[in-house]
Image (tube, rainbow over the protein chains, first blue to last red):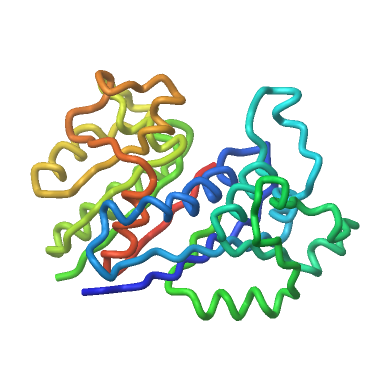
Length: 137
Length: 119
């Protein structure tokens, strides 16, 4: 049966400290190639939402490549934007941490048309209600 | 009967989340459901061949073999496994290896998904 599946990747943890947040990005971006396993009419539509300490994942200036030779979650966020994934960040959680919107990852240098959307938590709640599946990382 | 996909990210050793997940798969299979079992991140440790039973550490190889014999499909994230040095020749016989898109597709095709996070 044809099905368009809406998945919300709810990221609550900070980057670097564990692998989980990286897996949120890589799994959501795998939606681009999931069609090789899907039937006609089936589709996976992911949305990424950063809440709590998860907002640190999309702060710009991460130096993981410089210090460890590894892709940062800022890089992954840029790639997610490049492939037109919706990336949301909780406004209240940014403010609580003193992070301004101009410090968020930007994929335009890679050619991304999408930008990170700063939204109040009430909007993220609506996303939670409107998605078929919620995957917490 | 329904289709259930279980995605697990926790390691075999260091906690009992994988123990719980495998027993959950058994309970679902015993009820007659189709079960797909995805391991990613540290959970790919379960796909490593040569696991040995000790009383102080989780040992799930035997129950995985039994469940695979009943049709449960065990799959490890190939990139997560390779990153840990678990290569194709190191893979436990009941496991297949795929990229993450396999998991997303199974999420789409299943009636229920249980996504069980990692450390």
